[in-house]
Image 1 (cartoon, one colour):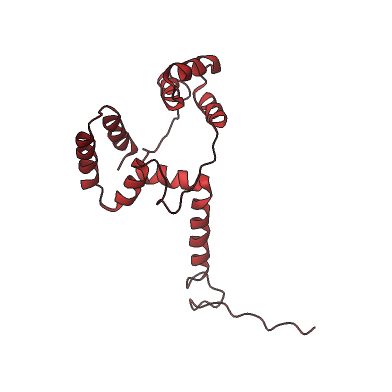
Image 2 (cartoon, rainbow, N blue to C red):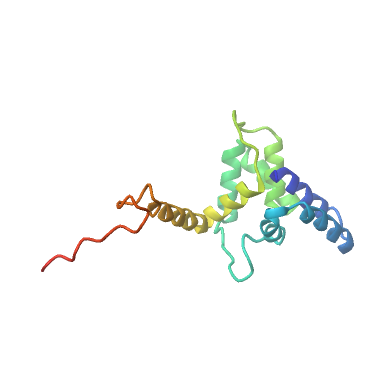
Length: 160
């Protein structure tokens, strides 16, 4: 699922105060989610993982503002004013992006998976998963020192 479609879900949720309408919006999004359902549920709740495991991005507002300014070439004064007016740095960032700023020549479409994986990576959780996959690959048939897919044999302990 492209992340832009998921952002539309957020926009529809923000546009209504009705709990019933919010339920219907979420039900429609979740009905088509397939394997993405766990990710969508946690993202809609403003989290990256289940309640018992809350990875933290550890990104301050100041760091976020610096990133927005760098990505958009917008004036800090103007973005800060938009932030004060709206009370939401995300809204100010969206405004800055809409004003032009830097453009990428080649961009892959953002998907929910890419966004979620990247956010997990920023928390340090994604890097552990990648390390685990790398470790798994060392025990595969092609990568194993034994060439038989088993665990490599250890040299005998040195006499000492």
